[in-house]
Length: 139
Image (cartoon, rainbow, N blue to C red):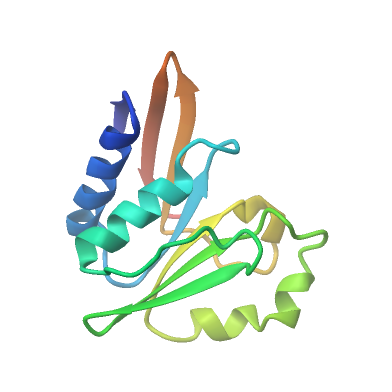
Protein backbone atom coordinates (compact mmCIF):
# COMPACT_ATOMS: atom_id res chain seq x y z
CA UNK A 1 0.00 0.00 0.00
CA UNK A 2 1.30 3.47 -0.89
CA UNK A 3 -0.16 6.84 -0.04
CA UNK A 4 0.92 10.45 -0.40
CA UNK A 5 0.61 12.40 2.86
CA UNK A 6 0.40 16.10 2.06
CA UNK A 7 0.79 17.36 5.64
CA UNK A 8 0.71 16.51 9.34
CA UNK A 9 -3.09 16.21 9.28
CA UNK A 10 -2.85 13.53 6.58
CA UNK A 11 -0.25 11.66 8.66
CA UNK A 12 -2.55 11.85 11.68
CA UNK A 13 -5.49 10.60 9.63
CA UNK A 14 -3.41 7.63 8.48
CA UNK A 15 -2.47 6.86 12.10
CA UNK A 16 -6.16 6.70 12.95
CA UNK A 17 -6.85 4.42 10.00
CA UNK A 18 -4.04 2.11 11.08
CA UNK A 19 -5.98 1.48 14.29
CA UNK A 20 -8.50 -0.43 12.18
CA UNK A 21 -5.90 -2.15 9.98
CA UNK A 22 -3.20 -3.37 12.35
CA UNK A 23 -3.62 -6.53 14.41
CA UNK A 24 -3.52 -6.26 18.21
CA UNK A 25 -0.26 -8.21 18.26
CA UNK A 26 2.45 -7.31 15.75
CA UNK A 27 5.92 -5.89 15.30
CA UNK A 28 5.87 -2.74 13.17
CA UNK A 29 9.10 -1.21 11.90
CA UNK A 30 8.81 2.52 11.22
CA UNK A 31 11.39 3.76 8.74
CA UNK A 32 12.20 7.30 7.70
CA UNK A 33 14.59 10.16 8.28
CA UNK A 34 14.46 12.42 11.32
CA UNK A 35 11.29 14.48 11.16
CA UNK A 36 9.57 12.13 8.69
CA UNK A 37 6.50 11.76 10.94
CA UNK A 38 7.11 8.40 12.61
CA UNK A 39 6.19 9.58 16.11
CA UNK A 40 3.28 11.62 14.72
CA UNK A 41 1.92 8.43 13.17
CA UNK A 42 2.20 6.49 16.45
CA UNK A 43 0.64 9.38 18.40
CA UNK A 44 -2.36 9.39 16.03
CA UNK A 45 -2.70 5.61 16.35
CA UNK A 46 -2.72 5.91 20.14
CA UNK A 47 -5.31 8.70 20.05
CA UNK A 48 -7.54 6.59 17.79
CA UNK A 49 -7.15 3.72 20.29
CA UNK A 50 -8.47 5.98 23.05
CA UNK A 51 -5.30 7.16 24.77
CA UNK A 52 -5.73 10.68 26.17
CA UNK A 53 -2.44 11.37 27.98
CA UNK A 54 0.79 12.86 26.70
CA UNK A 55 2.51 10.92 23.92
CA UNK A 56 6.18 11.74 23.76
CA UNK A 57 8.93 10.46 21.55
CA UNK A 58 10.90 7.67 23.26
CA UNK A 59 14.19 9.03 21.88
CA UNK A 60 15.72 9.34 25.36
CA UNK A 61 13.81 6.61 27.19
CA UNK A 62 14.12 4.06 24.32
CA UNK A 63 10.61 2.75 25.02
CA UNK A 64 7.25 4.07 26.12
CA UNK A 65 4.47 1.72 27.23
CA UNK A 66 0.73 2.32 26.76
CA UNK A 67 -2.06 0.16 28.19
CA UNK A 68 -5.29 0.89 26.36
CA UNK A 69 -8.50 -1.10 26.76
CA UNK A 70 -6.66 -4.31 27.59
CA UNK A 71 -4.05 -3.92 24.85
CA UNK A 72 -0.37 -3.25 25.50
CA UNK A 73 1.40 -1.04 22.99
CA UNK A 74 5.13 -0.30 23.06
CA UNK A 75 6.76 2.53 21.15
CA UNK A 76 10.51 2.08 20.74
CA UNK A 77 13.00 4.58 19.35
CA UNK A 78 16.44 3.05 18.89
CA UNK A 79 18.09 6.12 17.36
CA UNK A 80 20.45 6.64 20.30
CA UNK A 81 21.71 3.03 20.46
CA UNK A 82 25.47 2.79 19.96
CA UNK A 83 25.44 -1.01 19.65
CA UNK A 84 22.55 -3.47 19.15
CA UNK A 85 23.72 -5.37 22.24
CA UNK A 86 22.42 -2.49 24.38
CA UNK A 87 18.95 -3.95 23.83
CA UNK A 88 19.92 -6.85 26.05
CA UNK A 89 20.42 -4.39 28.92
CA UNK A 90 16.81 -3.20 28.71
CA UNK A 91 15.51 -6.79 28.53
CA UNK A 92 14.27 -6.51 24.96
CA UNK A 93 13.22 -10.16 24.75
CA UNK A 94 10.76 -9.63 27.62
CA UNK A 95 8.79 -7.13 25.55
CA UNK A 96 8.26 -9.64 22.75
CA UNK A 97 7.40 -12.59 25.01
CA UNK A 98 3.90 -11.23 25.68
CA UNK A 99 0.95 -10.28 23.48
CA UNK A 100 1.53 -6.68 22.40
CA UNK A 101 1.82 -4.29 19.51
CA UNK A 102 5.32 -2.86 19.08
CA UNK A 103 6.15 0.19 16.98
CA UNK A 104 9.92 0.40 16.46
CA UNK A 105 11.68 3.45 15.05
CA UNK A 106 15.26 3.01 13.80
CA UNK A 107 14.95 -0.79 13.94
CA UNK A 108 18.09 -1.17 11.83
CA UNK A 109 20.08 -0.19 14.92
CA UNK A 110 18.78 -3.26 16.77
CA UNK A 111 19.10 -5.91 14.08
CA UNK A 112 20.00 -9.29 15.46
CA UNK A 113 18.14 -8.55 18.70
CA UNK A 114 14.69 -7.79 17.29
CA UNK A 115 12.16 -10.21 15.84
CA UNK A 116 11.43 -9.80 12.14
CA UNK A 117 8.73 -7.24 11.39
CA UNK A 118 5.17 -8.19 10.61
CA UNK A 119 4.71 -4.78 8.97
CA UNK A 120 7.11 -2.15 7.66
CA UNK A 121 5.93 1.44 7.28
CA UNK A 122 8.26 3.79 5.39
CA UNK A 123 7.84 7.57 5.37
CA UNK A 124 9.91 9.38 2.74
CA UNK A 125 9.99 13.05 1.80
CA UNK A 126 8.26 13.73 -1.50
CA UNK A 127 7.60 17.28 -2.60
CA UNK A 128 6.12 19.19 0.33
CA UNK A 129 4.74 16.03 1.93
CA UNK A 130 5.61 12.39 2.56
CA UNK A 131 5.17 9.18 0.67
CA UNK A 132 4.04 6.36 2.95
CA UNK A 133 4.67 2.76 1.94
CA UNK A 134 3.24 -0.09 3.99
CA UNK A 135 4.46 -3.66 3.47
CA UNK A 136 2.86 -6.70 5.12
CA UNK A 137 4.73 -9.82 6.01
CA UNK A 138 8.23 -10.59 7.09
CA UNK A 139 11.05 -9.75 4.65
